[in-house]
Length: 179
Image (cartoon, rainbow, N blue to C red):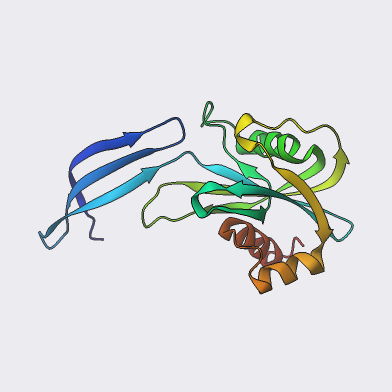
């Protein structure tokens, strides 16, 4: 298999959430070029489902200047090597106050491997119990919402739910017969 050779790599931006680097590369043909790569820790997406209802969160997403619905999801930048199952349980409780009696691992996907190494683990959470939420300061204004699976699917079809990882996680779970 032909692989691209990295000639030089330079970090051009970094904060606590991401690193952006520019790589000088050489293709198998000998042609040279560059790649911009966004490095971020893997995250989790949790599908909390009970009694034919799903639990979502709505929050303001600065990059697109909109409040949008999505499944609870997140990463622990301070502990990027955390066990994904522990992370999923923590994010679910943090964002919704829900604790799952049953968590099923659905799979792993990459978010946008054309420019980023970030991937995500998908969990289906059932047997849910409501407790207190514990939002991070960055999650100011985040609200949890419950709706029927039928309404959720209609919001995907209509384009109201635009989060690719939410739609993908639901679709993969459904294709695997878990929903």
